[in-house]
Image 1 (cartoon, chains in turn orange, green):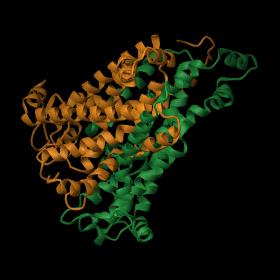
Image 2 (spheres, rainbow over the protein chains, first blue to last red):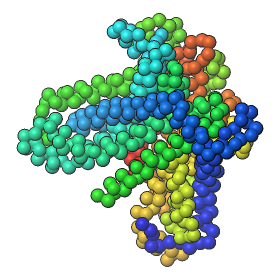
Image 3 (spheres, chains in turn purple, orange):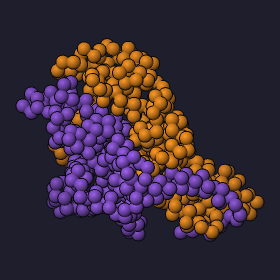
Image 4 (cartoon, each protein chain N blue to C red):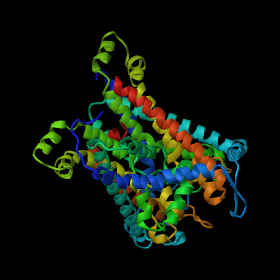
Length: 293
Length: 282
């Protein structure tokens, strides 16, 4: 799609593009190419010399038990976050779509978790579940379960899953609500006249028509769980106990900045880049299809 | 609503209210904890109703900070966060507006190349290029500075796309009329295109302000001097204090202060927020 009427100027368009391109090249393209290059090198222990080793870093990476464990953790984490957050928001959106009175109030009360930083969301739940002072840990203790995310890896993983899902609720809710409101009323009314109950209407009409929204949210939720949850992990469990909450993004940071394994960290960055590119392409292809409808 | 089912209505309201209760609970607990002296938070169960130390606790963290965590006043951190958030927001909007204008309203060699270079930023979040980006910023001497906090995050494919999309819907006749009347490209941009983009700019402002305020990894990497700490990353140092228990009442007061500005922005500018959210994902 192009404009018919355009302006002519020799240098103005370049001047207008310059700031954006300048920043992109210096802070995005150059570092990314450095990561690519670095991932093919191995440095000696003192960082004095480096050797070109082709794909050895990647081979080491996928032979590394810790890395594979981190991959598994990331997948469990993303699937749980997307599942938990999306099902809860869908329930809320369906209910909010039904009610007439108070819909605006409910909406206002549900949208603000979006504004809370992931790290802050992590700290909120970290406090709630804290074994010594947390209210949830206290209730669980009364019920006979000794919650301790400092020692128990599963508890720690559940903690960060809950915090991340809470953070995503408003986003999913808003998109589901918009999706529900765009479904033609006539379809639902026709089904109601034919005697379909609300539950049957939901599963046979509303849910299938909502699938583009669901699919889109699934991609966005995975991107969030893969990359934006660094703050939740770093501010609360710091990847522990015993690496049970070390997701891939946290591992890149940890191996690079704390462990100073430059080649390995760069190779991990490249793997992550491949994942983002795949997810972005996926999302764009899907959106193009939606536009053509 | 299609048919009248009173029971179902009651159940709907009930489910929503319970869920909102669950969503609000952590914030309520946090707020309550921030209004008590530390003694109240040492034994289980902790109080569920606000205490009487609201002003003392908040005044203490705002002006003096927490001694165990370096004693940086939260007031200073919040000002840093505000400077960072506003620079990122204004910077992103400014450079995206002019870049989108150049791409839509001019024909020049390498136009599509420029477009694709900008598009690439979408695929390269900070998280996947941590070390090399840190190195670039360090080599440029931008560690511990507001420029270092904001400039590397300013490039934005999303904002450029949004404005490009919007400019494409602006009627051709406007540009035609402007040219016939003898207006140059800059005059057309400032007097016609900018006023038309007002709502889009405002909607984007809300989204980007939240994005900027909530940055975590980036400030964590490039600030080592306490006077440049931002509040969202500063909390982490208060929670993970070594050799002692966190001073929960003050940590919780800081947490409330850290989430207050973006939450206020979202709630007061709800309509713009929803518009921005849905437009940026197109």
